[in-house]
Length: 460
Image (tube, rainbow, N blue to C red; front, side, top):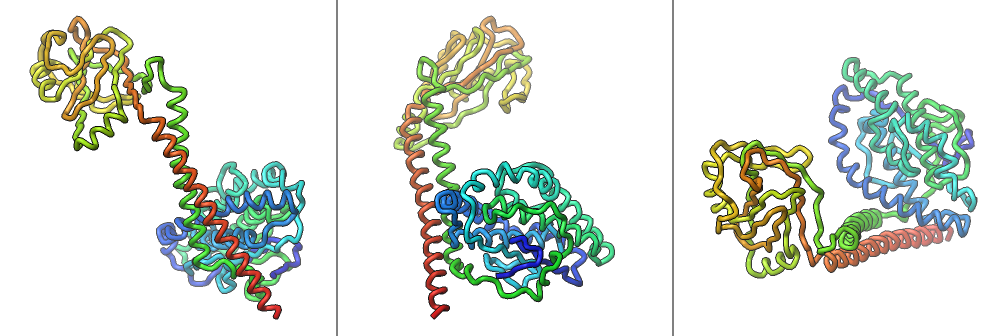
């Protein structure tokens, strides 16, 4: 295990590579996309394992070693990507896809494993005690505040804050001079080192409070250099590529399950609280104003097979349009509506929302809509319609057929299938969440067993 004379258990070393490309830094954001994609899932694994570690520390005073190895590996991986990209831009060597220490890479990170952690501190250090450091590191790497584990997460995609600005200055210097200013490198590494120390503390990996000390440069004061560092602890070997992939798959299942369960929960909430007395779900009221005699609301295409239509009809139920005033509302087949509005001055609603847009059509006054026989459904102030296959359009006119139609409308639907579908989504999402957790924990247990076996073999 690497130790340092500074005494702090988080050791960050880096080496400024000579002969950096003048232009490569311009495209590193693109080259690093594969790392960003993998790390997005690994950081979800980091969060899950940190939560497990929280309870393990709370009840046993120990951080499970296999989870510690994984989370340190995520920080190492993130630090190498940040060093290659816009957290430093100090090497052109592409980062390895690895949780291990990779001592040959010009940026390394090692965290001493704590044999015992305070059960009390675990309750407050990651949020309350770390607040002063969050304020400092927020300026360094993000320009704002963030929750505990994000302190380290931002390291791998930092492009904001003071670190990002200084890295940009270094890139411009490379572009025009071919040299990375040494003083700038030392300053950037000092900020990165501070952030990584805080990340380890917020990630529950140490009880030692991060020093308010700016240790600039590639090596910590009094520490061995990156070339002289002794071999790291081999505990990471339990995390094989297959187990890391299992964590990624588990994280993907967690994300999918969370989204599906969230949709189901929202559906149940809407079904329970958002229905009116008649059992309809409603959109918010939107204002519409046309300068002609009528407002025409586009074309709704309903084309399904008979089997699909039975499902759609059960899903939608009855549909209702309601107005705040006594305007005439009619729903008819698009061809019939077009014939009725042919030669009538009206406005076609092209987009809805807070700023609806219209296409004005010139013409004269309309015939009395109330005596037309082509409407599938019509009424004053509101209209209720059960959808049928075909092309449909809705039309709104003033009851006295005067110009300038100014009204507020809301769309409503019964959606009888909302509750069973929401329950299905909630159950399915819960299954995916549970499966994701199981996959991740099985990977962790397997890695722990592999590490123990490797340790036993080495002792023998």
